[in-house]
Each structure stands twice: as C-alpha cells, then as structure tokens.
Image: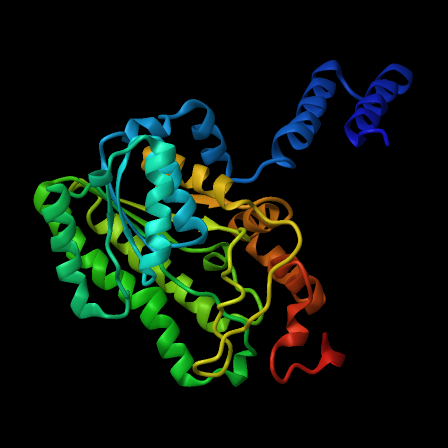
Length: 351
C-alpha cells in the first residue's frame, strides 16, 4: 500500500504545476508540514521537548556515580528504570514490598550495569507504613553517604464505576498513590533543601492530565500528585530543588491485573492486551527526563499523544469529542479490550 505522504506530496506538486494554486513558498511550507506529521509526529512516543532532548540533550550516562532511590522498583516501569540507570553507572536503592523480586532486579542491575554488590541496595518498604519512611531514608544515607535523586514510582490503578466506589477504596488508593509518596518526599526534600541540591521525580500518568472513565479514585490521585508537586516546583524553584513529574501512557506491566475496583480488598484481575509501550522504552525516556531535569515529560504513543495535545491546547474540543465517543472505544484504547464489561454493575446497553 502506498504511503499517504507520497500521495499528498504528489497532489501538491500536481496542483502547483497544473493549476498554480500555491506559490512556491506555500508549497514548500505545506510539504514541510506534511513531512513533519508523517516522519516525526505520527511515529512519536513522547512530547516534543522530550523528543528533542533525547537527541540533543544530556545523555543518561551523565548520571554516572549519582545515588538514586526508586520506590515501586520490583516490576514494570520501576524495574526497567533501575536496570537502565544501572547501565549508566548509577548507584541505586531499590524499594518495594517483595524482597525476592527486588533481589532479582538487583542481580540484573549488577550483571547488565557492571556494578558491584555495594552499588545496589535492596531496601524493602511498604509505602503506606509511614513510620518506616524515616528509617528507610536513614538506611540509604548510611549505605551510600548521600542521596541525589528520589524516584517516587509506587502506586496502583483502578477500574470501577464512579457512583459505586466505596469510600474506603478512595481512602486506601489515596493513601498509596498520594499520601505515602508525599510523606517520603517531605523527608527527602528537607535533606535536599539543606544540601542545596536534589531532584524529586514522580510517576503520574497521562490520566493525571485528563479524566478517563472507570478510574475515578485513581485519576483523582494523579491529579492530586500533579497539584502537590507543581506547588513544590514553584515554591522551591530558586533553592536548588528540581522536581520532575512524568506522565506515562499504557505500558507493559501488571498494573491492570492488580488494580483496585469499587470494592475494598478486591483486585481487577484482568490482563491488558494490545499495543502498548514497552517498559524498557518508557524507562529510557524516563531516564532522559531525569538526566535533563525536565519539569514534566509525556511518554505515550498515538493516538493518546494527540489526545494529550488536544487537552493541553484545545481542551474544549477534546471534551466535546469525549462526550460523543462510545465508552467501549475509550476502554479499548486504555486496556486493549473493552474492560468496562468486566466492571461490576455495568449496564452493557449504555456502552
């Protein structure tokens, strides 16, 4: 099948030669715009600044020798990020609840990064146990003698009907996705501010930029993270504290399977299928954003990237479109399948 770009380019040339409806200058501009859309925008899997920085900014290897603490490091983005940073010579503290999974990540980091045993610290931590945060930070400081970057990556997603969500689910999800991250970040930020330099990095989601169905508590938590850390960005802008908020789209992980539902203590248990960004690619872009101290970074492919741009620049247009798009189409875009039919109490005739 012929590429649409060549068809469009031929049409521009024909119209110019036979009808003369474009000036030469306009033809060049139009061809350049079409080439940008075809070869840069459509294949893009991140925002334009991150796309540019990946090619012309500081390499990830500039982080060599730094100490990075990653929470939620046992799987998904956190696991892949730890491995990518280890390949760049970064010393890493790994935190999550599963000691076994963390030890597996540590071994991979040592093997692929050429690091020594002491360069990777396995630090089991249940993020909602706030009384453990100070002791965990002290352990990192005792082991490495310093901390340069905290990556707050712990969290869970959700699939549930808005009106059916139990209040305890809201509280439990916010405890994990928001308040636990804030608690640890406050301890670390005090150290960074005293030192006069430090970097807080937070994993949000594309859903932290615009609302999506069947995830009210989760999306509310991501909006809350954005508010908390954007406030910190402005408040401490001149005090040496950098803040990066990362907004990944659908990524290869078990996030959907362990998602909250509308009922306390229940997991969604579904597997995401279809096209999604690999954890390794997301981790690479994540590391680029860290190395270049970007204030925010989007990591998602099309068409979600276009939705992000519409929401940012033409929010009224996106909201009008969302009212007319069937729910099942939106859920297929998020999860690769119509997961709305698996949510308790969904009336299929309204999908």
